[in-house]
Length: 632
Ligand code: SF4
Image (tube, rainbow, N blue to C red):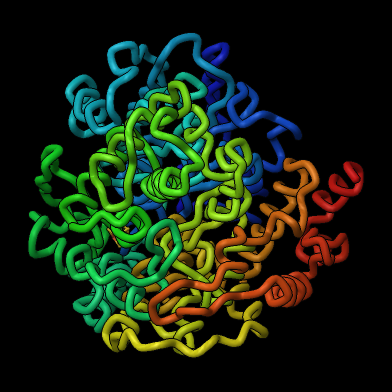
């Protein structure tokens, strides 16, 4: 009996319709625990090298963790993985909501799809019953529209993930949508699912998950909820959720504006968490078992239309309200809604829109190519670009490939301001004077993403202050001194080691990161649920191993992978920031090199950023070292 796990791996080969239920491999579970850990190991073991992201041989994995679906704080997460549509390397993206718990109650910890269905289909899972059904009625429909319609077909109590039209057109930054507002947003995971002709997965489960010591788990659960409710972060952070960060980031000059040309906006009070609460919010909306819901479900009205929408979260505010310069929270929320229904990742889609608007302003891309003028701060321009890139017609086919590929083709220096790392668009923090955060983006395993390590607070304050404390302390908006670049690696690696643990366990990290819920609770809960004695150090060991493994996956899959792919775009290092609290600051190429050298050394990677054989053997990845050796 594997306590904490449903015990079954569900495999569906969509090409021949074969459905197989296998015992969850105990050796993998023992070493990689769950969620992101299992995703990484299954991808390494089962994808043949050189698989194309949209080929039938790519895998689509949905993995839960041992704490997913257990009635404990934030036990909601599902981790998706594949070879990346955005970068060609390692990809994962996770999501809260209710899908993962339902999958486990149906009896499955992990779902692996391979092959390609012969026609648009959806996967129907109702406990033991697993069927591939026609999705002819839904193909071409919006992600939200599809979820609503499918609930009518299969039943309201099914938990459903869908993809939108952008995924069907294989837009490389299309996402998975769920629960009318939750997304697994990054790496183009939605387009990988759609490339298999799968429009949705509907799951309902009525089973139970075996728990090692149910009485103890119950006591730990009560203790955990009580502890969270009593934290200052509970009342300080929950009311605005991630959007509460807007004012602070802007005032320290780290808010990306006009495609990262500047890093401060005057209209921040029009797009912040307070604006959401005052002008949009109807109700707080949380994931499965969340004591501190960060979802803000509301209604927006603009000259282009009105919509019910969850969010916007901080990242969406930063990219649409800052990088695209939309002036009001209503407009940001409307762009958010358009992305949600088209099935676009708000971060990458807004980044592509901002890059296009800058190209248009500079005369690099013309009105003839676009079909109209496009301008920063103009909702019509932004929505037009979102809709066109989702169709992939004409010139917009190029935009659907993401800013790296688009700028490579458009040329004329537009790669200078294509804001990405490894092909994944950068998220909501401008880093001209935030070297630790810059390093976190440069070395994130899926490309430029903030959730792998968030060390902006440490860059600005010099200590690892919690987000809640940063928000409470506020920021002056005055000129920031230049931050020292050396010595950043240790903090970045620490954050890159801590954060994946929550993804591996299958829980939301925000209870710990933003509310201050102590890690000791997770050790106790893990023991009560699984019966296993693993302390926080052991979780860190597994997390560290997974970090090396995902780097090796990209080494294996991306031709000529190495150091050159870890640099930020020229705008973020060669161009000093033009205005705001960090005016004139930049991180030079020499400083970037210093940071990378320190980071690689601390990781045990060579000067080219490749994990050494010695390091891989030390962390228990000798087989991975051997494979890389053969490929070399
Ligand atoms: Fe979901 Fe937000 Fe709660 Fe985390 S904090 S479980 S993301 S609602």
